[in-house]
Length: 464
Image 1 (cartoon, rainbow, N blue to C red):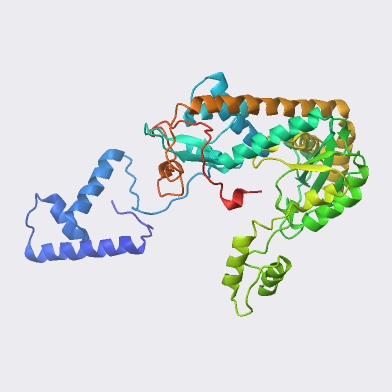
Image 2 (image 1 turned 90 degrees about the vertical axis):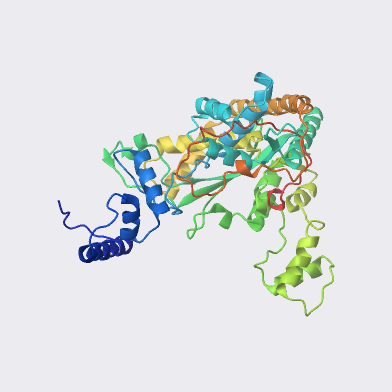
């Protein structure tokens, strides 16, 4: 029975033509080799017998509902679940560490995934979880028993150990610890239940999410620092608050709002935002900017040097001249500053406060305006007193103790493992982009995970 209104693509139309020519030939010369079906099919379609056999095999494997795929074609696939927030990243990291304590064994990725499904309702696959773990600063390494393990880079682990050591010393000295942080809230941030305005019983349409309020604040165990709150509207073009919160604006906030309200001899905790340090020019900078940086640092260069040569000179010297601008400013007023270890926002209670504030705004937001969201932020900040902040700080101290205990357990466990040299990265577990159609990891070999201490350099981009 003929199929009407069927539109064939160019390849299918070409195939029809070859079949037509083959049948014309048979009409003139007669049918030969009638029982050699595969050979006749290959001649009719102008393909090889091997191709015909391969297609027939695919059809038999798929059964009645045959689906024929174009070899090598990239197809749409589900987006990996890698967009976990800072709080969830901390949960994942501590889940890896605590596995050594609670189970006294090296967990597999599948075991971690099942636990995270229970703890934070993690919806990703094993592939997604591997990517997240690697983002957090872990690398796959081989052991002499040919068992791949996940290694936490020594640079990150060392920064955490040194951070915890300094924090213990500051607390022992009775110093006031002041945590700082930045975040943002979209003007349309709300829950479905908040979509209805009780006064009008109508549903309002949220405005573009590109409008967002940036929040900058600081707090200690006694509560938020008075007069330190800064809120402003993010850049309209990109909606990215980093477009507005740069070193210049952050320094202005420090000098005009934070420092004047800090108790004497405080310790200020900051994250690893790029604008906390004065950055060297990038390869996209103008030649005059490259030359200016080199001149400022007293580095010799010749006037006939081209842009790539100037930038190469900057790259080889910028590590020696890296300045922590924020630390210098605070030291002028007899305050100390300490940076969080990379990927460890779970050690900052103000990050937990952002979660509380965003939840409050989402429940109360019925205006979807910048003004309305800003008022809700200030309203919730007033409701968070010393007792609430003390609880958040206590949670962070408990997390710090978890890291201290797990670091010792990790050392004890990894004494039994012999990690091969730095070049033994296990590429098969990085799960980069590929052409596979399935996201099923059931057939893969279970991979052990540990946060071993290993001498491997952290890439420059991950260094705060």
